[in-house]
Image 1: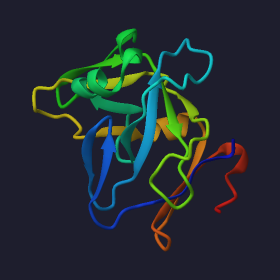
Image 2: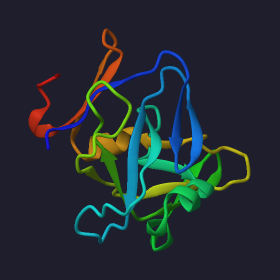
Image 3: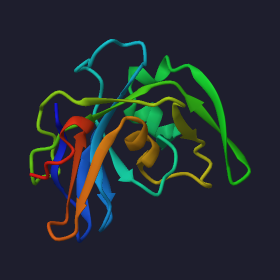
Image 4: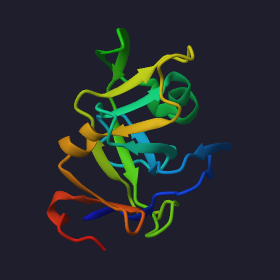
Length: 177
């Protein structure tokens, strides 16, 4: 699968999307992607794993971050069996890391909706960061960070002219679309 995201639009005004029955506001200039979580030991994609929204955020320097409530509400049964991997320090707070793999769902080219094609698995070497729900220092939405892109050897292209993002596997990095 060479193309994971194809001409995914970057909104210039707020966009409202429905995730697991809840309305989620995407701010201008944010890159929304559809993702799922599964246990690392699962050998392949399970279509029963729920889809939810995350933001592709190259300024986030971990693999994947979310709030505890997102893990419980959106992570489904996959979140319950996640093995602890340790902690990271964020502003002098210990944030737990859980073992899981992240799946990015391909989009319909030029649209913010999933295409229905099989998702692409991202290996999260150090796991995902789970922030507490205490109202402090946590991401508003789930974040896919730069380490997930780099460690999985993906090619991310952002076109300012098209206001679109393309994410591809290493093998096909030279094609834009």
